[in-house]
Length: 67
Image 1 (cartoon, helix red, strand yellow):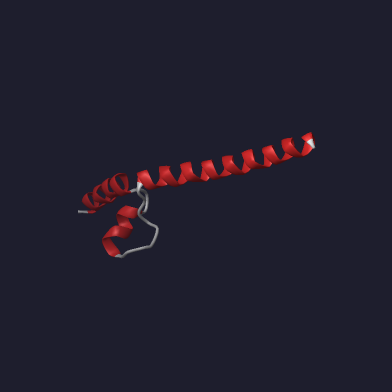
Image 2: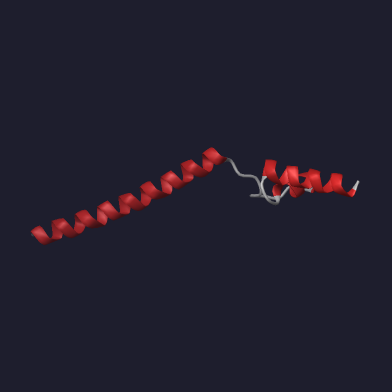
């Protein structure tokens, strides 16, 4: 029975992530579950925001030198 428990725990880790398999069976923890698509979208938005800030700063520096 002990090896069956180890096998089930290992399968849950593979399916849900490292701790999610254990957490999902006992309680709900905010932020324990992740959606891959939302992670990619949020990362893309973050990179676009940083890119926008960089371009804005660069344009301000270039236009200031022209005056």
